[in-house]
Image (cartoon, rainbow, N blue to C red):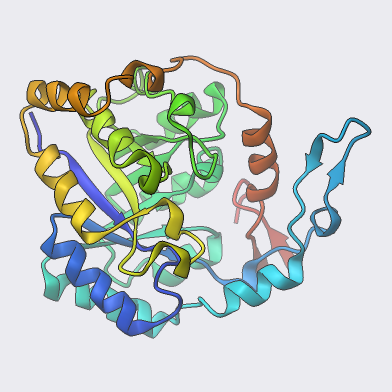
Length: 317
């Protein structure tokens, strides 16, 4: 069986600090990650959609639209912007550390900016699994692509799979609830994704302070081809994604677990997590209200400008 791939997602845990990022690269390499990943987020590409400034709650007190005002979100992201020079440095530093560099592309503009920087693989975020023109373009520039499927409808997943044929690609199961409770993991959904590709992994947003590495370990025991985890070298309260991020010691533990024979993984996780079956959930399922709210906000959160016109990822460039 092929050795499972581990992805250390730096996300925004570097806090815009180059030295933090350097330490993350080297510690990820030293503790067994195969890829270390950053995100090609551009604060200038954050879209201002006025309905999210105030949000909306119906007469029964149920949220209908997430409240995420544009200005404070723009100011927060602006502090985390990485220049293209810094991204090129990141690629070179990864190679020097002996680990493969990866990025998440969030817009057409960022795709064209980073395509020649040397990233060995690219990640497609859950909310862009159904951005079919963007997927087709990514195939022209990368031969290894990881496509996350959270908050995506089954028919969209099927169409994405048809587009991805011809390259080395993985589907990643995930649930777009942050953090994800163990009884909402629906790890059985990996079986549904295997109808389209035998390389199916898991992007884990559970909270390690409360549930340790159980979600990631169980996914590996169930045959996940790869696991992506948010990664930090800081205390969990020092960054936005800190609460769902694992530490270097946790990464090392996950690497050792992933390298065990699959049968041994299953026996080990049953011992660690006696209620493991609660995490299996459903292979086919409807998205929850919380997931639909997140889909509504994050799909279209970023977009590029071309000739003065806003181009979303599901539109043709």
